[in-house]
Length: 289
Image (cartoon, rainbow, N blue to C red; front, side, top):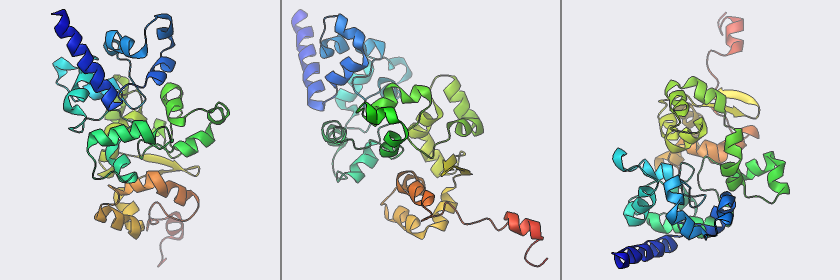
C-alpha cells in the first residue's frame, strides 16, 4: 500500500513538473508562512496547499479550475488532478485572468494544443511580461501605479496579490462600480462570493455576454463615461468589422480592449457613430425646424 502511494506521488510530481504547473518561487513568496514550516514548495502544495485552495502559480486559480468539475467533486485537491489528467488538454480554463485562445493567436501558437499554449505562457510569456488575456492592459497598469515601477514588480502579479483587493483593475477603461451596478445578476454573483469582483466576472464570462450585448458594459475612456455596443462599434469602424468577420479578433470588444481604447483616447477612432438624436438636434428642434 505504501509503495503504491509512493508511486502515485512520484507520478503526480512528474506531471506537475512536465506541465510547469507549480511556480515554486512565486508560491513561497505568495505564502510566506510556508518558510516557517520547513517544507519545500512542492511538498507543501501536495500535503496542504491543495486542500487550502492555495493556487500553485499566478496562471492557475484552483477555484476557477474546479468550476469545470461536477459539484460533488469541487475540492482543492481534485482541481489540479483534473488539469494534470487531461483537463488542460481539453481546454479547461486555468484562471479567469488567463485566456489561452487569445494568447495563442497573439503569440503565433494558433495551431498548438492547450498544453503547449499553457507551457509557453508560463515559461516564455510571463517571464517576458506578456499579457495572459486581452482584458489586461499591463503596460498601462504599470504606468498608473508608481509603486509597481519603483519596486520592479510584475504588473500581473501585483494585481493578483494587491491590486484586485484594492479595486485597482488592470485596464484604464474599466468601470467596476457601474458594471456591477447596472447588471443585477453580476451584483448577485459578486455578493455571493462566486466572483471576487465584477472585473473577474467580466474576464471569466462577462466579455462573451457583452459581445452579444446581453449585459451592459459601461466604460470610461479618456475620462468620459460611455457604454459599449458591439454593433455600434463595428458599424463605426469598418476595419474592426472586417477583422471580426475574418477571424482576426473574436469580437469588436476584444479589439476595443486591446487596441481600440488607446486609439479612441488619441482621437484616432470612435466608439460609435453620433446618435441622430444628438443634443444639438434636440435643442434646435431638428434639422427642419
